[in-house]
Image (cartoon, rainbow, N blue to C red):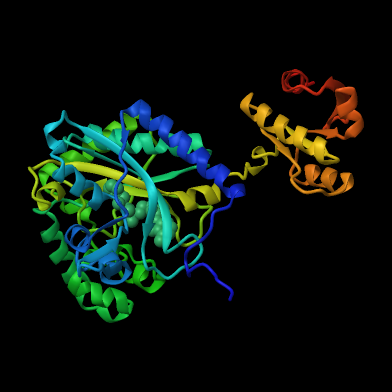
Length: 418
Ligand code: HAM
């Protein structure tokens, strides 16, 4: 029987992993400087954690969750994102009693039952951060600046940062009804999804990518013009602070985000090197979410980077993921055992070493050493064992060096590179 991976799910092989690890290492390094600590959250949660926070009328909850009943009859969901799980952990473990702001990061797979297409998967990886405990726009600025630093240090060319404010529970309802009134008469020109959203979640119409919808909503009011005083001041300070720190950004009032928990600051980073799924990272503020989970009134903000998307637009440095330093080709039982022992000893001395495990010809062993990109090759046969010396061949410059068959002596030759 032939087995294949599921639709929208992919294997990540070593040639791609190099770039993933680079992104992860750079992120960890930057997080350390900004005081973010790692948290590992469960991949499965009670379904209501997501329906309650992300919102019943969002695409994620309506159509995209991997939900099943476990053997105890509980409704379980594979996490579609990390923020809801994080806030559950924050409230459950009373992290609000610790000094503010509390700053965390996580890395791992998320699951959404979306229509797979280029850079849109059903299992995808995020690097996310959450910071809770202050609604000061300095925190918003800092988090956007940190994201920019990570993307820049990873080698992303021209990250385009778009920011907006989506108001709060006080000013957004007024904007929502004004927006609805503006488009009511031309609703029939909007796509079917938008006609449905008009009733359930009208602001999502602002973010629809269908060209007829983009055209139809042109000239409609912008939420930024309807912000209450507090939200407006918050947004003005964010923009001022971003300028202060030299973080390039543009204001895009059409950012509405696909999750209901957001308040005020919303942002996205896009890349022109991606197709229609061009958001590399996105996030925003969620000032009511901790209370929604039964905690105190604590505000929060965060973002998540889509690792597949970022990896796909970075230069392919997989060449740096090269082969072993030394490969032993052996002939005969005794030489095979000697090569096996030396391989283990050299690994213990910090050298990536490989040997042949099959009784194959010297020619095929040499070919294998070449195919896996070994920098050096050493041939061990009966003669070499008798003499106690052998030749190390540098596969780059073809130079040969005679050396006694002892791990420490071999090490010296390997370390003496031209
Ligand atoms: P999100 O916008 O749903 O936000 O996802 C963040 C990023 O994950 C996207 O910008 C994209 O790069 C990537 N992504 C999302 N869906 C897929 C997919 N199906 N395939 C590949 N990549 C994908 C959140 O998840 C929020 N929890 C972010 C956040 C954290 N807000 C506050 N704190």
